[in-house]
Amino acid sequence: MPKDGRLDLILFGATGFTGWIAAQYICKHAPADLQWAIAGRSQDKLTAKLREIRKDYPDRSLPETIVAGLDEVSAIKLASSCKVVVTTVGPYCRYGSNLVKACAEAGTHYVDCTGEYPWVLEMIEKYHETARQTGAFIVPQCAFDSAPADLVASKIGSFIREKYNAGTKDITFSLHNLNGVASGGTMETFFSTIETYSLSKLACASKPLALSPIQRPYSAPSHLPVFTHPTLGKLTPWIQATPDRAIVMRSWGLTKQHTPEKSWGDNFSFTEYKRVKSLLEGLLTWITISLLSIGVLLKPFRWIARKVITQPGFGPDQKFDINKKGNLDWRAVGVIDKDGGEKKGSKVFGSFTYNDGDAYALTGLFIVEAALHILDMEKGKAAKTGLGHVMGGGVLTSACLGEGFLKRLEDAGIKIEARDL
Image (cartoon, helix red, strand yellow):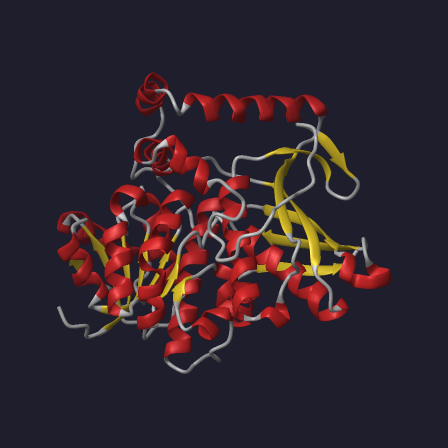
């Protein structure tokens, strides 16, 4: 099907929990002249969402509706009809590959909110070069997974490079405050990833530099299951550490490969933790995560879990209020590497703060603002800066969208900073 790009944006999965949050964000914050559509498998459900939009946002022009399934023909239909596709339809390892392929081949930009790093590795191997040739920006994990880690790491690495002309030895990143619980779709994604990939592929994808275009020996500071960081407090390993590290190290590798003058250094490493209030809380968190990591490998555990958790398509609160306030806070400390001269070992503090909602509100904000930023660059409303334009396209990260994206996030209520400690 020839590409006409008639629409600016298509939101695929708008009838699901996370997709509907993104749809509400568009209604509340996107430009009034945005030409967009909501897409899903059921026309009845899409029509019901139009009624909700008409009721809750009476001054907003209604989006079009597109009935699309998970097959290759539907993926081509979506990719050929717009400039940017935003998709919340997961598990992506089961339902997302056709759409990435279609967007990469059509030169259509793509944004998602997955945390499935083994699947992202598969998409890099299959479609990165195709997307570079067509100019498509393919931006996975551009949400709660793994944009905060990626953007804070980029902020610290860039700060140290620009101020001290030095590399960053390592970054210790911690989830300082979190509100909200996992939805059914999030849990199903976790289980599906385990069922889709062999243990050997999961182990390969879990290596620190699995998504990076540059391979090298990798070492990072190691700690006890619970330890006290002089700046960040008591920390324990966190479940998002592996997917977040995968994306951060891809940003490191792409930066070093395509803009070496901005490199974060040859020895850069990234570790992620969760702040806890006590040794007991830390040990319980560590034990829980360890047991879950083992349990998900067992079919009986997954069967029982699927019976008792929220079902996919529904969230922790079906009366989700996009205006509800919350607090999300990540903090980090970066250490200047040996090429920093007398500044070697000095530290830089970084932070990410969002006080206007929970993790799902943040996800809706991220994927929509990323898509709108890409659209503005396409339309000449924003400067074409960032690593993505240096590369010309490909499977990118949120950090590849550049300073313009950071400015959009700041205007949307997110504060990202780096400063000397």
